[in-house]
Image (cartoon, rainbow, N blue to C red; front, side, top):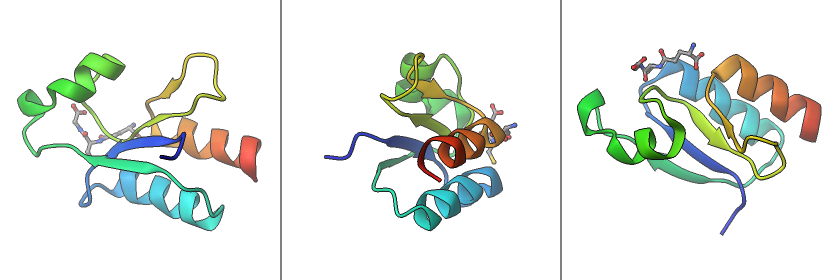
Length: 81
Ligand SMILES: N[C@@H](CCC(=O)N[C@@H](CS)C(=O)NCC(=O)O)C(=O)O
């Protein structure tokens, strides 16, 4: 099991951007595709406090969770680029 965990949607442009960066940096991660309906995204909400995707868990960060694609991409470049 990889340390990085990504909650995303396959059809979400913000999620695609994060997946591209993970792929570019050759980073392994576990992906959970969330349901289409926001109200069905209970697991994501319980773990991150939000229902939007993408959200990335990286044990290397202090908070653990990054919940905005700009923030995630910047973090990945800074930490693994
Ligand atoms: N500023 C956010 C936008 C993310 C976003 O709008 N994601 C959409 C899917 S493409 C979503 O999950 N929206 C649900 C919501 O905001 O509750 C980012 O860059 O990550």
